[in-house]
Image (tube, rainbow, N blue to C red; front, side):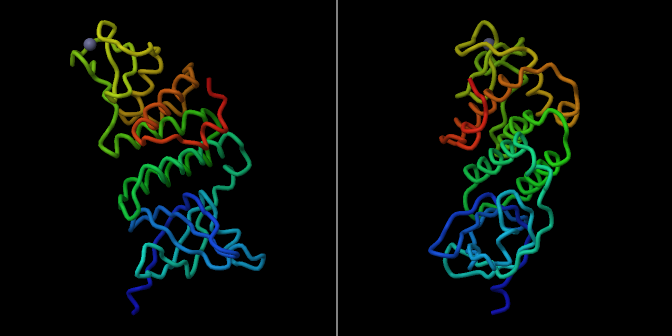
Length: 244
Ligand SMILES: [Zn+2]
């Protein structure tokens, strides 16, 4: 039965209680995508897993495959706890919104190394960054939508398909409209070019720049696109941010 045991790296998306002493961890793993695993005894003070298996941690897991949907954690070794994130409220807010997005946006057992790498890289980035923290979650949303095959259309108007100056965000069309076609509210040119920058692969330059971007407009746009795509709210973001 040796093949019932398997190793993989994973990032904990969230945990929830099971019975008196156990928890279930929802994990995005490098090799098997999103899965759920029981962590026995984690809520006992003596548990060796208590300080390790927590949201946002990168862990080397040794798991036991059960016949059902739940796996079982046999061993968990912390690889990175991103400790700078934990001491910064803004970074924590971004992190919880990102974890919730991946949890809600990915089906159980849907496997994508691209998503794992995006998640790992964004946490590393957040841990080390010292500016533009509130641009990280919105930028992640735009990259996540792209990875899901529903990236925003930024090179032409979604209604007339012409390469005209874009003016408004059309959430249902996953893109922007020009001044003559626009149905929704106007978006500033700075925000539209920031979205383009993220999608054209110059994310790092945006995050490192001293931009005069309207953070709230950028956040609102990303959240609107993401929540429309998921058909659900990103609750951890709404709770924490000073939106609208
Ligand atoms: Zn148009």
